[in-house]
Length: 322
View 1 (cartoon, rainbow, N blue to C red):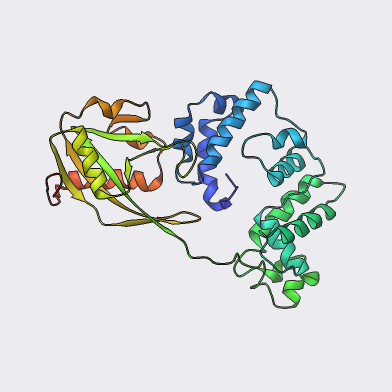
View 2 (tube, rainbow, N blue to C red):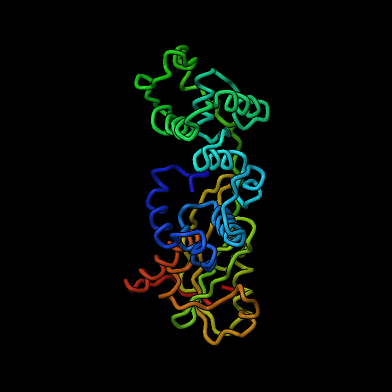
């Protein structure tokens, strides 16, 4: 959970997750839907799928590996995570290089250049390994991460309270605001899609997204590139449809692009069975959907739809093709 997410955000999710899955075996035995539902809101859902797969592998092996190369084979575990596990859990002398450690090292040594560049990252790994103590490795690993998380923070670092400030290049040269060097900015592309909120009686049509890609493995609303394609598809499913609501464009930002989406709420009667040809397409009772593993924006759409119905608000009604 701490990969790409801050501790303050993770805390509540972690407690809820561990309560539901108190052991590796419990996590391994759980349906993926249940795992994703308890992860929803943390983003980067590949982490949840990898965690689930890793639990199944560990349960099958009967024990958690304590060898670097074996840990590295677990889904979702990279060099830094493997080092953290070995140093903290097994007291072995391995380095880590998460975002907090990168910030501490770049400032302390005055290293310029975006840490994501191969040259800079290679230099930081060499320093991280060079600094490893031969005793109390778990305490050291936790300490350097906590130093970056609590004192050597991204904005307004608490340098006066830092035990390393006397030898810190960035502090002595007034460069803490410059280091680490930010990632070069690039213009974020924008993708436009239309989500279909298809209602039949008290049911809503959902589909499970492919395992790979954005929101992988989560339940979502059917997605179309144009409004015309959406309405044409609806017309193939039922001869009696009405566009009840056409929501304003909303934006959701991912790490590498903006998603501008428009939601069309469509009511249909007697839909054809070809909607249900694949296991990934399912009609769910409206009261059941909030318990599914869904992206946060999709949950908000369904909550808003429920509120609109309860408040008695109606949008412009139009026929297919108008």
